[in-house]
Image 1: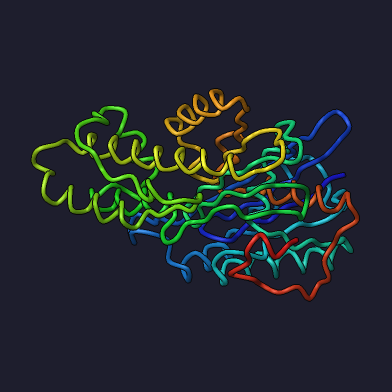
Image 2: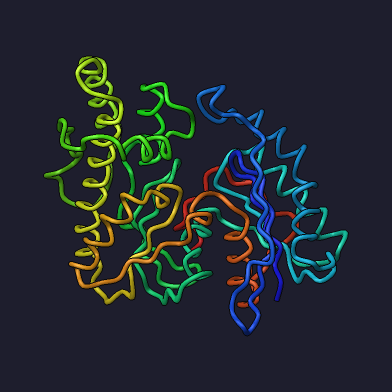
Length: 337
């Protein structure tokens, strides 16, 4: 089975083809293009992102077909992100996918972007159900118990900002380019993570919800008053350490909330590309007697291979969508249950 995936929910224009051949799951092609310069605007501008998708999606599709060395008619179905995300970008991808489905007479599947992050690990690893997912990205920070395809329990969510947004906004305070997460990680390598302390959010609160707005404010005040005393690398290292502690503290609570055995703990989303956090989570999970699974770094950030993979997971279970499915800028994962 070969599924073509299309992803246009934010600023990356992505098209991929994934196969579930008996020899193993294979990414036949994975084209990801970002022609935007978000650093010029301090972030993603929805209208500019949508125009970029409109301009480059066809080129990405042609390259994905060429890289896979197949004919468009060899595709078994088309999977496209229909939410959550920026409405303009979603509509560009959906309309392209619907036109392609009609032209090629192929089934189409509307894919939830969060479900794609939730299931990406199964494309590259033996991640058996059920498992505990820590999804951390620019738009979401959640604990989800992944029981099966289309069966998810939300255990914890952010009460305000996401981990990725905290990285990006704090990086912007230091005049670092967007996206700020990778900039913080690189800069932190040269810094002293014990130079000063930042408050760990919700430290004495029950449950496994997150909060990053207070940390962001504390960082802003610290940077404004102490930037002459410490190097930027110290600020980056202390911020990264505090975010990591917050994630691990709440992970400990999430593990205790699960009342049935789990196969593993999966860390997915753009923040999962951070090697410092991965290393800390590895140690924590090992001490907890479980195992940690991470998608490859190039599959942590937005891509179409994960969209195609969910297409395979769903299409192999005889699921497909009608052509009249709608764009859903807000689409909680629990609504798939």
